[in-house]
Image (tube, rainbow, N blue to C red; front, side, top):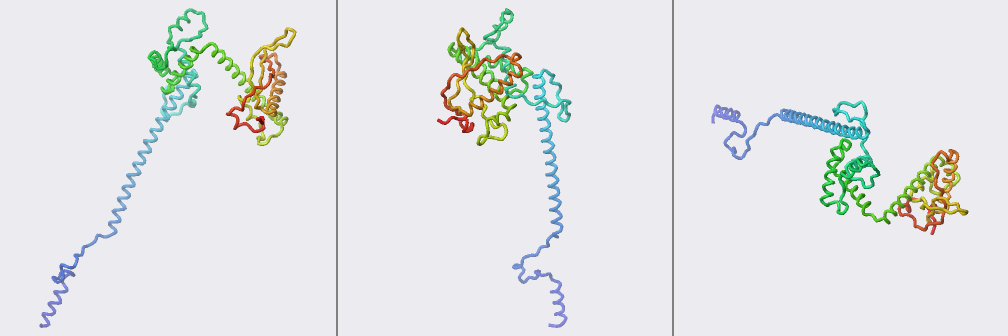
Length: 350
């Protein structure tokens, strides 16, 4: 082969791209040109920024919606409470204020359950027949007879009583004083009124006497308890010093926790004959057998201080108290409500 031919072949081979030769072309993969990496990274960053912006926008919208709902709920709650309390206290409820405007008078606290019960009971009495009406006015008597009356010969689910429940429910919920009262509570109070009226009508004479007797005892025990608590709270340093320390007692007002209604003596009203034609209405006291001597001593100290205080203030200025006379011991076990509360020294060992 001449030199010119060899040079021609070399130039031809040099101009051919790798893999373009016919020899082994089918076995070698074809190379592709890859895109620059910097462009891919730039596109990913732009997508992330766009997504973050959308999420931030959605978060702002959700917060705005939540704030609007919270403001609306607060405005409604404020109006309902102010309306109910304003009417209950005899003051005008006033217009509805937007949530963003603060009222000149702070919103009143919500009514307690006892206050709502009193309002419901008062509204019931306005429409229901009064059994023991104490009036000789013919107009009042006629108005009372025209009112609704429970059918105490039947249960609460009788159609006569069901109609009354529905009537009272609609009437009470329509009254401004009952604004915001939930219907289920109103219906429950109406049914409780029926139960109370049913028991009073169908109670036997003997059961009525026992009920009144127990009510007097309970009222007397509460009165004695309140007086002893007031006396102890104002003279606890003197009483604690006279009683002395007890194991497990607090450093201040150590004996306040034992002054409970169940600890008080059971009193029975009666007439005591003192001889020579002298008789006096007294309260005969029966001390519970479970009370220890130390607990009885504590109560005696409190009663002595209370009596001295009444003498200093002048007994003539206050309502005279019925004399209390100790009459034996009433054998009763420790009430279950006190067995785990009272300290050991206050309970008598069997």
